[in-house]
Length: 444
Image 1 (cartoon, one colour):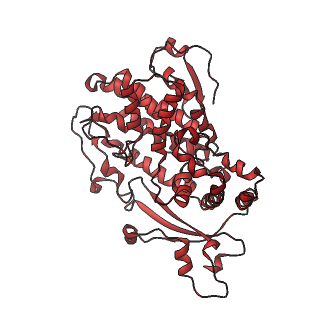
Image 2: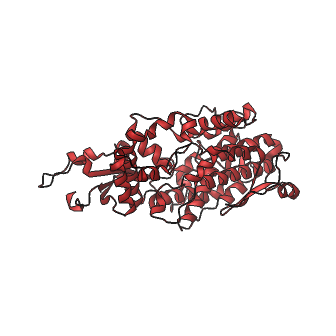
Image 3: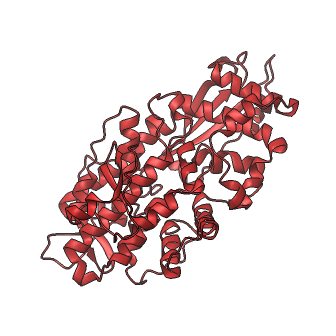
């Protein structure tokens, strides 16, 4: 990332790329390798220049994926700045297209930007692995989410650093971050409801969070990305308090979800990536009693101290209580990974009633042989790959319009969609790994 400029920003108003050139000239900015120059407004800088936000530099966007894709070392810090910028650009375009009609003002622009900036500030070490894999193993029935922690962390930052922010704006920022979660309390007829779909879209999944990470992750892993989010932001329109898209863009919309599914298939759930994740989770579980890692999630003032460096903390600690955890991390360093043994694709007609397979299930179903497996000998991961809407066609949740003279929105029924699009929208794969090198594929 580029360095900050030195000019004082305290007197500058909210701005965007469409702002007067002299306004941008005296603003602070960073250079991003995806979006180019990102200009930072004064209020957002107050959040950025805190130890809580700077912590995001120590959280890799893709967790342990860089151990398989060496270039995937970008951080949540970069991603958060990218989402901040795209959120502001999206509001600015809507303001240019329909500002008078929709009543969009600078207060709205600032609010959506801040939500984009702070939406991931609650992520834990190795991102999704922390809440989806580690916490469920150490806290029974854990309902914790990084979005909820983001909201708590925002309050902590405001209180700790005495940031002067309008209370109503702060509430809207937090509502926007929770908009796609089960904790959202938004009503469908809320004022300017469409603004809450820009950062985290709970209605149909099209949001600037995906716009940024799909491009950023694809580039970091050396993969092509044929999805063009710019076409969507240039052609979108708000109808009945909802962001809609031109009907002729339905293939591009589908590419958004197809690109996401492809990244899940080839990167996020790569067999080697999952093997390393399983090992890191096991190491953290073994270290949890001694280090109290899971206890950090109850207090933002402690939680911000937790990041990816927890691995190094375990690795170099002299304490004998961490010996087993250290051994697992050493195996990862030496590439002595859990060995992939087999996988099972759940039949399409069984997915609706599928129950996650456990190591205990595998042990109970093994055939009697001279070598009997124990539960600690194997690891199982249940991989779900979909188009962000489970088994549903994501296009069915999206409203379109015919042309700019039309005020009518409509969905595109499946029988009107190109036959080249897939007829199934979700895969479930069960993978089995051997934790010990002496156990091989022949044991299963």
